[in-house]
Length: 258
Image (cartoon, rainbow, N blue to C red):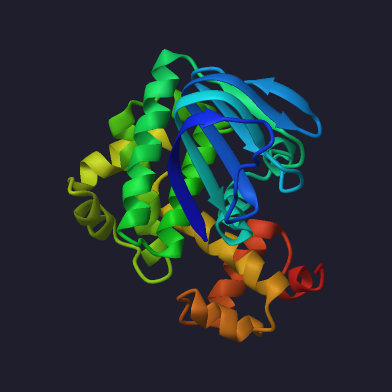
């Protein structure tokens, strides 16, 4: 579902880069030359990140001293789209685009992608990798403005919290549980969430549950009763009340939108 490799060497235009999965990112650390696609020729610059559409061969020409070639499946990409509903996110891979990072942004990006490589090597599960990829794309594409102001350590903390939340949001509600997972006190976790994400733990859990409810209502055959149980509600009526407050309509009405 995801593959990340370091590429180095001299490349000729006649040879296309091989991609295991359809969605592709090229992160240039140090290189000289060009990236060629049907849409045009693009210079390889240090700190430049290419977001490459599914269609079209990628051909490099020149010397690549160090770059990362990341390919991944639409299954992992889906979490990013769920967290980023704006058109810029949806259009990120429709046509070739790129971002040029400053020195500080480049250092964070290289550190994040090296950590991602280690997580892949340790065979992390899909939910964790999807969270990591979502954060990485949000940061590098500058779609999550608040992330750019964070230190590398804070970025790693955001990732760790997202991973824990993704694994346990259906059954764990206590601040102490998530604080233990983060290795900090409940008070420090509350301060961190307020500063970095601008929301309390209870709101973040509710948002994640309702987002999952939307997916289950639109894309599965589960009944409302079944979905309520899946999401940890003891009573379907409690789920219905929460969903109506969240979306302004009943779960049954929402399911018919699909």
